[in-house]
Image 1 (cartoon, rainbow, N blue to C red):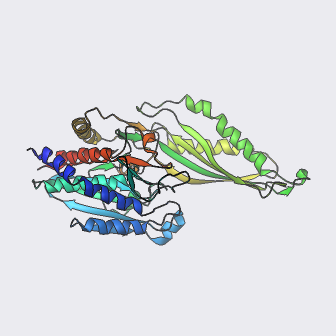
Image 2 (cartoon, rainbow, N blue to C red):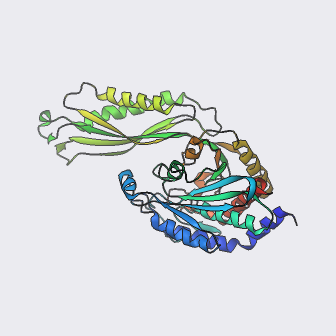
Length: 409
């Protein structure tokens, strides 16, 4: 039996344990917001102690976390050094999740298994890859063959807010500098590039007044309507811009939330809009932000009694291919072919993820992990999020085989 055969057999023999670990990881809530995520990290640190591993717990200072809009963040690094002369491969999954929302038929934090699926918030994105990566590394080490280089497991808790206090914190504080990164995935595809994202909060200030005497007021909602028309009027032009990256089409822009007014019979004195502008990898984020800000300002320029404030909520840069990325892609594709019996595409995604922060640091990174053929099949970020357990098994094998390719002495 070859080393690869042994590795596959070990994962099959220990798969029930892997599923049980995933249930544990899913059952601890990490809704973000509010983002009180240190308890989950502390629990995961205790879980990996069973395997004789030590998880370094890197708590982000509370004042910085609170100013950021969250409650607590502790990021984990599990270092597994092997022999000299090889690369360090980091595996990164995030434990923070969007709140469950309504419409679930299974408990969102139950880790319920039914008809071959596990159900729960982040069962697919991306607590599943806590299990994928831990058991891929366990399988690799169980072989007992000489290894070179090392593996680092990075479990971080800030993807939903942009990642700056997740992987961004670990890199900023020089706590890690791997040679390659595989970050949490969500389908059979290998993601090699993704969009950038700009999010702005636009506060429109007017003057409230009685609904029977609107002439005594300055209507913030009327002004906000001009901004909405300007934003949505831009969409046909955005559709004309096309990315050359397979899997990515055009930029998008929308207003996802509107708050304002005090009562039905009162002219609104204040309206707050939250908008999202996705940028394809070819776009320059600074130029896009300057253009969007001017678009908003011009829409209300000269309106009496109206002022606006524009606050940046997020600027997430694109993930772009870097030299060395092709090595990870080639290994994942070869092993995917062997395990899945089909070609795994390497492409871009219009989503954004915190893997970009490794790329910004010059570290080649791709996204690959447990998930179905397409993201919608998992109900990711919707009710009844689920993962087919067989997809977890397959992804674990593919990642473990890829680690063996990189780290076999």
